[in-house]
Image 1 (tube, helix red, strand yellow):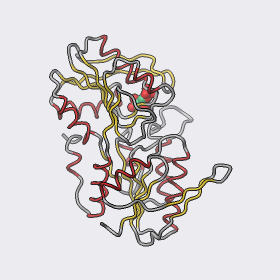
Image 2 (spheres, rainbow, N blue to C red):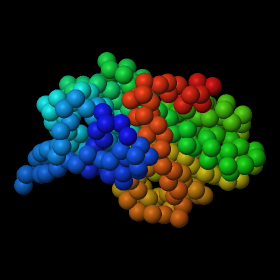
Image 3 (spheres, protein in one colour):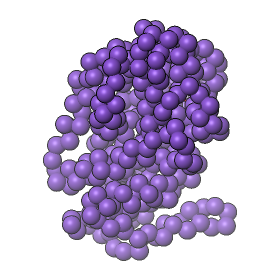
Length: 313
Ligand code: R5P
């Protein structure tokens, strides 16, 4: 057991933190997270973290309290003389606001990067950022992991012939094409038009999905609108089976019901965000062993580049 590490969890995804702690064989450090009557968050580390490398596990999906809680945890660790602070944030919230795509709007992802760095993190471990270039919003090391590490062995295990990987929108082309290249199979791309956030007005698939076993890959499922529409269009175009894989399942509003009522045969997600309700259609693959390996590599100062073989293929 490495005595220099302090592993702590916020309240966003304690189950994932528990699994990571089990994998590393390092107990989670006791931390009191209290709330004033008005909702303000206060953090108190129950044990000393002076001189320790503190890894704070907290994905920042909604509500925004998860973000504030993380910031307060970082600040408390900094003021308690931690040697370094690593934010282990497998789902980086606000990543969809990665550029100014119209006037008078915010670049929320950059603002988040500024907040975490100002609070005091020395490194970020994250997974499947909405766009890779968000890494550049930080002036500290970012270990950007890919869920393909768990999804690819799963796909291989399905032994599907006539496989076609589909990106539901042009933004996901790089991700989908890396999968298709690695799996040596067909690729098709969706062209999605939105009139407002979370509403898909139109979706067309460019490519041949007829008689194919289709796997749609995306980074985030929010309301499920994108995945369900892409699946329906693929089916209309003659796809044999439609499976979807997506690491970050927010499943807001009627997301879960939308998936259940869709033509998607199976949705495979990760535990970056806790699933609020089980569904026979949804299978969860844990990224805890993978994140634990990366934390170990950070501590041991060993390379993690083999995890990037797929994306660089
Ligand atoms: C958007 O570009 C993302 O990659 C996802 O496709 C999107 O966030 C999914 O949202 P929804 O499930 O509400 O369609």
